[in-house]
Length: 103
Image (cartoon, rainbow, N blue to C red; front, side, top):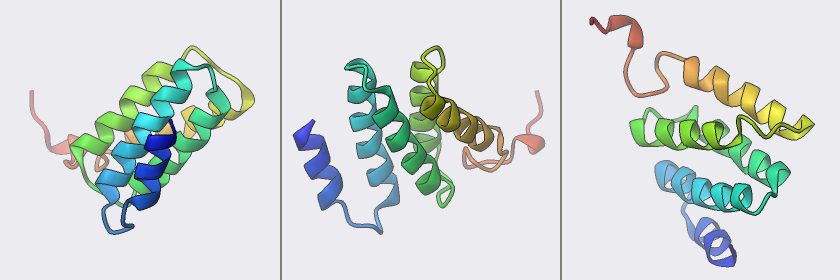
């Protein structure tokens, strides 16, 4: 995990998508190790950054972390999950307006 932390620290703030992706890797490692509160903290950071972007890749990173944590709730993870669900339901979050889709 140290290398993931170093990678995040070296990421320029202008590279929002890369920062979210690197944070997602670290958050997933914390989920795997059972450090759910730290994963949720990192996830909240991801969502805050994701709101400034319109990227399907970023959307998928948030969605995957949300799925990994959905059944593992603590007071901290519950807050992250609420924040992530709100982001995921935003029609513009995935980089396109879902209301304009036809099926």
